[in-house]
Image (cartoon, rainbow, N blue to C red; front, side, top):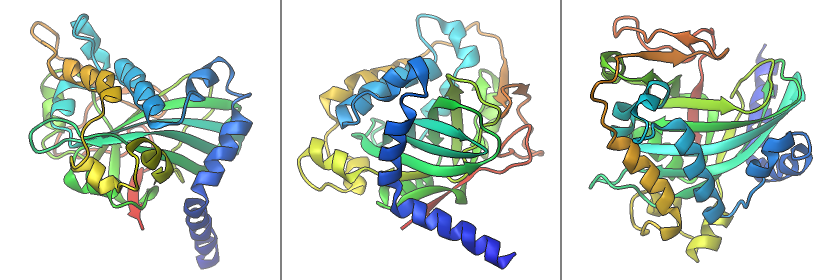
Length: 296
């Protein structure tokens, strides 16, 4: 048993070290498999391209003020308003039984004055276990609910699924049940949308890595993710659309909307939001706990 644990540990450790190379290989090999969705995935991996991609993703996850009823199937306004940070990225998954994962995105943090920091680029890579057929592009938004979660991204190391900072599938909808879920939330709420067909979905083994090269190319120097996420770098104009999407969703008028909320399960079904006494499960509808760990 110890030998098996050692093998898994070594795979994760080696994956973190080689995450950049692995992501690059997956981008090339997976683009032809992802069909029509690949054009969005394969857009520029520069920070301007990532900011524009994040704006599009957030539009599909957050409520549209011009269509208030969209809040019933969106990340709740209350969740967004109390968020300490957001990580927005895409993952390309391809394989059968042993699946490769690679992707890219950005992370940003809430500043003390309530505004949002400049974005820091991240990349994803990893190997998953479980039945996964074909190729798929998954859009992911992780709401960072705690300062600890933000620090995990700002330390300049790797954030790896399977460690010490827990992440739960986040609530969807409006009303008192959402507010109750925020009384003692997990450090991270995860939300995902898949464009392709899958026999299974797992984030196990996914590694989130700071893309120092992309940050350096855009900001013009070797600025640390800590400086970016603590407001020492001005928010760039190129990311204004993304900030506008967030601000609009935070200002949504929920007057007259029904109180309807649920937690999406791994299979896409709607599960009720647990009461405070029940606690908040990491993966409703499954026995797996998804956690994140900041490595160095």
